[in-house]
Length: 125
Image (cartoon, rainbow, N blue to C red; front, top):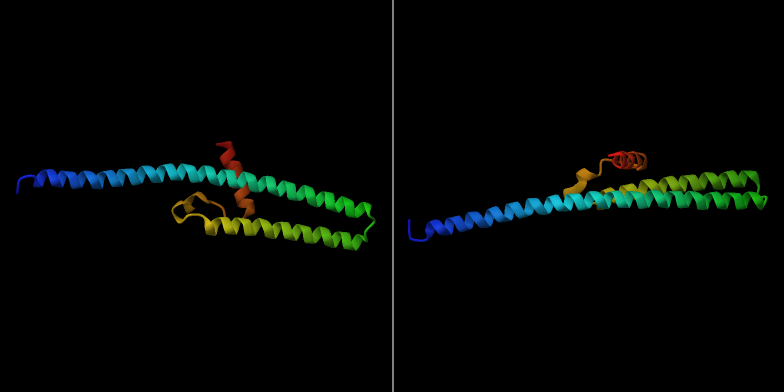
């Protein structure tokens, strides 16, 4: 073996070792960050859900006090519920499709109800 070849091989092994260890540490830090981000997003969505429900309740009270036809009121309430449910499912679907592929294992839910349960479970831990 020529002079310095052994040192060069150790240098190459060191470079590869550094890259592997740095990548693993980076993945670990990003995993923690993405987990925290997921929880913050879910908190925000659940607060938004409550605000939407509150706004709908005010709307429905206003319609009642305006003496709107009862059938029209029921239809409006039903449409508002449907729209809120569609919004919830679309939000979760978008979150799952837009989430980075390396961290998909953090999203252990497929719909709003599962997301809420997952969030509650994480709050207990």
